[in-house]
Image (tube, rainbow, N blue to C red):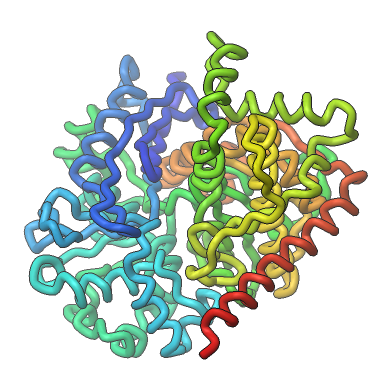
Length: 550
């Protein structure tokens, strides 16, 4: 019997990837293409939906090269929660002052709408209870309001279709305007089963979106993985080199696809505390440019400063709480590449790993191990250098986009050792940020006993070990390193109806690779470091108050 395949397509911040995946969750081939990011002014980040779609077509063709198209039974998409604007004829509409029509995507990390988000928060509509009480500038309502207030003629009046990027991809593939509950619930304030809240949109000055049963932002919704339309349209099938009618599942935000690709794995035989517990004892952490912390529950749990509860936005009929950090991999890159010893680091890494393809972070991990040779643990090297990691604001659990980064313990020295210690302090701060989110979720009734990590940073062994040590929880890494692509492929598998439920597909296609246990001897160290971490926030609030006084 011929092998059955599914395709997962992932549109991340800076690249488009695809994978050909078997029914057992094995990646047979992958492909990757870069995508452009423009920054027309500070805190404005834009992309092109035309370029993104072209890159999707390219990677799908590459992973299916030499494969009988009849063996491909389904395709699923995930993407960043960026905002795509099209006109009545489904052509791009510019989202910047320069008027470039091809630059029609407001990226997830674009913070141009910070003032609009603050106004929405101050208005205090009851719908804000589902986003931790605070509207983030990374959500779509403040971005839409910004477009109306700042680009009314060139964008807002011409915009007829406002998509979350994952829904744009599924529309482009199928012609269906049905929105995924993942996107509209998590980023657009939709609340099933009631639907859109007229009073919310009216209260923030976007009452024009109510027209024609919310046709501009989505009149029809469905759960992730549900088959859309008649599958691939003839045009999309030609673009992909696949059969018209190939099943397409309703899409996911990229972080949620990562959650789908890890959180439901069968953990029998790994001696984990979650083995005999509900899936609600697990947290999926998707860590790349930014990080998302996904916890699910059978009943809605309201966590201050944490998004949700969202019904059926990742796992059908389950409630999702979503914490996050706006800059993780991006912050590590910023701290390392901005250091005076960065050039020396590059040279040393090239000499150490000339042919293996190991990167600068592998070198830094090795360098820290050498520095700790006379010490019991690399972690203890971070005892006198402390960092507050919110260089791009705090997403959770403080929900304050105005927060800034802090470093305590610097000196005049700028050696490679100093760079390595700053790198270590950055990762420790990010792990303590995860602990901060876990504590907030615990306070609202979540009982998390195991972390499931995926994404680019999960490939960094020291990052993973520090997270286990700082949180005191075991960390599960997936068997297939590209868990986000597995999650996207699960959507295609569900749409093909080869599985009866998303949960069945998760258990079959998501697998445990290895488990990283916390070092119990470091528990006291991280308890002390966490107290310092929280004190940094208090100090920042104090000096901001002093400077604003009078």
